[in-house]
Image (cartoon, rainbow, N blue to C red; front, side, top):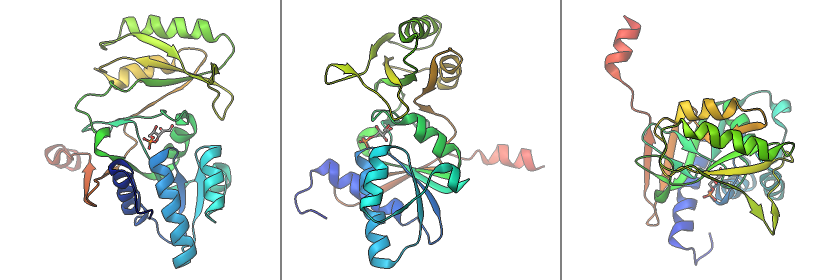
Length: 250
Ligand code: 5RP
């Protein structure tokens, strides 16, 4: 590990290293995208080289695919894998239900497909990603280029009926042009400030023609590992309602 890491990078690497311990020989692993996921790919590469760890990785972006190959990880497509044992990815926000906002790096479409095709999803994060209420981070919505302005108007109309505090939208730009995802689409960021009902919002957005996928990950994450600069980690899991479990099994 480089000697001079910022506290945030230290926290991200600590979370990534702990998550890498969950990866076992023979596993098919979804590899997330972003600066935290990059620490994971790096650590898995070390384990492949140093311990002879045998895994196959399914990357969630061209960036992650390139890094995984450089690290010597065996890269396969999701269709070649069929199903995954585990996906490990970063997040922009998570709440106490482990509902996530993802897509800050513009990869949430592939990330959601890969996470959904996995037995388990572990999120790795620094403490700044934990929120009481989702929505301070803009919610990314991937849209196809055709009719993008009409799609944006329909998104804004849908927001009028939603329990949110902000309704501004913006087309994500990079170097003066609309950002283009790995799938050739664009991203409209929703500046909602507070999301009152994530499930209702996600369903409404995904019903709009032209919307490919929104960045809300609901009931997908099993464990969040939060790293800290001093090397400590916190584990966040969904609380199980034991009373409900007893009733269900009665
Ligand atoms: C990419 C993502 C990332 O996981 C998310 O943006 C977090 O990134 P980082 O680890 O760099 O903070 O969803 O689409």
